[in-house]
Each structure stands twice: as C-alpha cells, then as structure tokens.
Amino acid sequence: MDLGDLVSAIRIVELSAKSRQAAIRALVQAAGLEDENIGPEKILEAIEEREAAAQTLVAPDFALPHAFVDWDGDFRIVMGRSRNGVDYGLPTGQQVKLICLLIIGRKLQQTHVNVLAAMAELLKTTEFRQQLIDAKDTKAIDTLLLEKAGLKADSRPTRAPSIPRITSTLIKQALQLVEGMNAQALLVAIDRVENVPWDIVNAWTGKLLVVVSTHSEDFPVARPDTHIFDVLHASLSRMDRANLGLLLAASDGLLNEKSSVVCVTGPDGRRLDSITIAKPEAHFRAMLSEKNKRGKTIIRPAVLLRVLSIALEIASEGREAHPVGTMFILGDSRNVLRHAQQLVLNPFHGYSRQLRNVLDPSLAETIKEFALIDGAFIIQGDGTVLSAGTYLMPRSSPSSSLAQGLGARHQTAAAISASTVAMAITVSQSTGTVTVFRNGATVFSLERGSSTRW
Image (tube, rainbow, N blue to C red; front, top):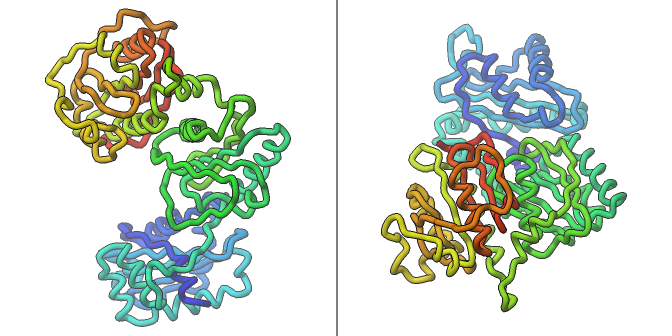
C-alpha cells in the first residue's frame, strides 16, 4: 500500500487516558463510526476478541490494536500519542506512548494485511517513533508522518471522507422530493463542503445550496448551479443554520417566494437526519426589499448580513466571560435620530466614514466592546456607524403584541421599527436569541445554541 495514501488517512489525537481500556475507548470514539450506525461497544468487543487471540503490542512503546467490523468502508486509522504513557499490562511495567487503532471494513477483509504491513513499515524504527512521541503537538506529528512518506503538507493525497449511510439515503430521498414538488432548490446544511455526498448530487441538475459552518478552501466544487454559503456559527440550531442560508441565498437573488425549498439538516457537522420543506416567506422580502421613494434600497443586504453575523458572535461569545445584550438600528437614520438621545459621549463621533463602516472586518471587535454600553447602535443603510450608547424614545407602540417575556430592549426595538422604516436587531442578554424587527413586528429570529464561550 502507498505510504502517502496511508498517512493521509490517519487521524491524530492526544491521549490522556492512563489505562489500556480507556485509551482504546478514546481512540474508538475519535474514529467517528457512530455516524455509520456502528456503536463504540461493537468495535470494542471486536478489538477485545482479537486481543484475546493475539496481543497487538508491536514494541514496548507501540501498540497496533485492530479489528474487523461490519462496515461498508475500507479502513480507518486513529493514532494516539500519550506523553505520560499508557499502562498496557506489560510485565516490565513500561508505559506505551504510541497506540494506532486500525478499524477494517468489508472492502479490505481480504487485503487488510497490506495495511498492517504499511503501518509496520511506517513505524518500524525506534528513532522515528520517539520523534512522534516527542513532537510538540498533533500538527507536528502530522508533518513528521508526511515527511516520512516523502510528502509535503500541500501535496497530501486527497482522500474522500466517509459519508454516513443515513446522509446518502436522505439526500437521495430529498432529490426525489425536489422533483416531485417542483421545488426551486435543495439546501444542505452541513459542517464542511467535502461532507456532501457529491457522487449523488452531481447526477442531479437542479439548484443546490450548501450551507457550511466551517470554511473550506481546498475542496473544489465543479458542479454547475451550486452555491456555497459560509454560516460560521456552528452553535446555531439546525433550522437556524438553514434559515440563515435561505436568507443569504435570497439576498443574492437565488430564491423567489413562489415555490418551496427542500432543506436537509442534521444535529452535527456530517450526519444528516431530517428533511424540511421551507418557503422563502414574506418576512425575507420585508428584510431585503424595502426601498425609499427614489427607488434605492434603504439597507444594503451586505450590511444586514454583516450586522446579523456580529450579533450572533455577541450572543455566542459574550464579553468578559458574561452574556451581553445589545441593539442595532439599521437604516432611516435621519428619522431614527429624531427619537434618540445620547447616553454617553458618542465613541464613533469624529472618525472618517471609512473607519466606522460595519463592512470593515476590523471594526467587529470595537463594536463588540461598545456593546457593553447601555443603549443602541445607530447604523446607516450603507453600513456607516453613527453612534453607540444611544437611548431611543419612540413615540409609537409596536404594531402587534410581542411574545411574553420580552423586555424593554425588544419593546423599544419593535416600537422604533414601527415609528420609522428602520430595521432593529436585538441580542437578548438572557437567552442569546437574535431577533429582527421591522414595521413594529418580529420578522426573523435566530436562537443561540448550547455552545458558548462565556
């Protein structure tokens, strides 16, 4: 077997377990075969059966446990490095510091010896194993393995990721649903673009929207009418990731309101398990198509999406290890300021427009810091930030009653959107929910997921 192909397939983890059983369990969990409906207990049982027949200790510092499982894949390798050593039951009491788990599927039942031979060749010298054990981190281990195989990081062979069976099955069913309903697009919300079952979707000619939570630059997509959207907020719920993707697609003019979109989502990055029929509702039009009397868009879509992204980051990250609530008012700034009073000296006053535009990525941290100040951010439709720490005194009331439990910030946001043609975006300090108001009513909301930094 080619060493380059072998090395490219190895997953590397740091082991903190001290016993053999705990270390192997950690490696099995890192293999991620639960996505293939193969539980860890089944793999552990197979490993113990083989260990009982012949222990897979290759050298005093290196073990190569391996087992066959009922799996449609070929093989999966997880290398674990333990700095302190694992008690592998050696009579001498020596600690094993390098454990490579090899899981073999149906495709390699007859030729698995080739993989074992390649692993033995790769790690046969004591000197090289010690280099791996002493490496600074997992990235350094990866570099050493690549060099051993005669490769550089940028020349690593590409190995297609294993696609969970349920993901492939759902995509096939979703494509049938798209055709049967004459839907305008298929939307897939997934972690990485390479985790899409491209062998299935490439045979379909419709519009494909892929919403990813991890940016990928090294995976080319040649399929026509395919649109990739980065929604780098993995903490969002599955439907909120899909809804944000629909909003991004609508802002690019890729969707209309006349027909449905079939959305395939899942609880994590790779495994998809749900199909939902969505329709780009009228609230998307309310968010993206408002124009003034001269026919110019009041709020640029790029500005809206950028502020939404910052709001989601504030909801997820908080500030100084505490949750933060804030409010952004977008567009119709002249009328908004008639209902406003500055609570503190305006931190954005006196700076050039270029330095205080939300489309400048360098401004994000500044906005997050000023979100600690009570009051709202006033932002023009082109993205220019006029003020922070602004107290709003709208004369109108919300056009419809808000949900119970929403406080003064949400009431004020709804009221100012009723008094003007501005849009208001709030971040709830208590729940982390990001809510968009227009014309006095809620038109869009995104709930913070369970993963936060505060």
